[in-house]
Amino acid sequence: MLAISQDVLGGPEVLKTVEIDRPEPGPTEVLVRVRAAGVNPTDWKLRQVGGWIGQPPFVLGWDVSGVVEAAGPGAALYKPGDEVYGMLRYPRDHGAYAEYVTAPTRTFAPKPATLDHVQAAALPLAGLTAWQAVVDVARVEPGQRVLVHAAAGGVGHLAVQIAKARGAYVIGTASAPKHAQVKDLGADELIDYRETDFAEAVGGVDAVIDTIGGDYGPRSMRVLRDGGVLVSLVLSDIHPGLRPERGIRTEAMLVEPDWGALKEMAALADAGRLRVLVDAVFPLAEAAEAHRRGETGRTTGKIVLTV
Image (cartoon, rainbow, N blue to C red):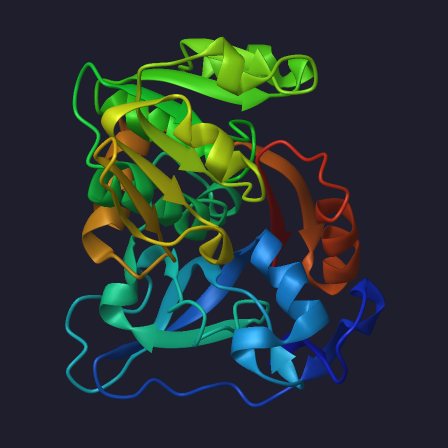
């Protein structure tokens, strides 16, 4: 099968098309023919440094939408021909930039009926990150005030919608040209981070979803009410625990596979309550160009590779 691999760490130019053995599904696994693969910031970061996935050669990618080709022993959940979407176990089980992947059946859920493969491939990693941050860690409830940083980004635009589906009042930070689009997704209030210090503009927030890191975490503490929660998606910036002086909870998280959440998100998408913004689509062979576009930091929503 064809895949995108690299022999050395470096810039987008290290990505190349290679031919490797097609994997075979083991017990409780399925072989999925990839129709589209999502591209995420973690992809180009690990392309440069290796990090958790070690040294090259390796095949990047965690987001998959495709069709079940074969099932391994004991894999009764899906049959050949079923359309599925999901996220390979992050960060260990990378390899979505390829024609085929194998994974345990519950890595995948039935593809949302109203989404094509491109849209479905844009959803798993960013959507699960947003879902787990908003629903599982922040435990957002109806009527609460939620601040989402980078609300037009891959995770942010989905976190806005998931928080709204939970009945929250949602505030987002984004550049002014993106305000109309994010408001259309359900944001109640938007702050242009280029012109306004969000820490001076809002207060009484129950939960902050910080996708940026750096000084955003400490500044976000100022807008939280007593007993609020700050969820950081940048592990190095947060020391999890309780801030006893105000009862503020701080949490840092990485996304995990979640069959139940994939099904919940599919239901929201099919009900018209969760939309996926796709910034650009590239064929698999142009993965390097997809990375170059992502690294500009000016995208709205997700980048997807078609296979």
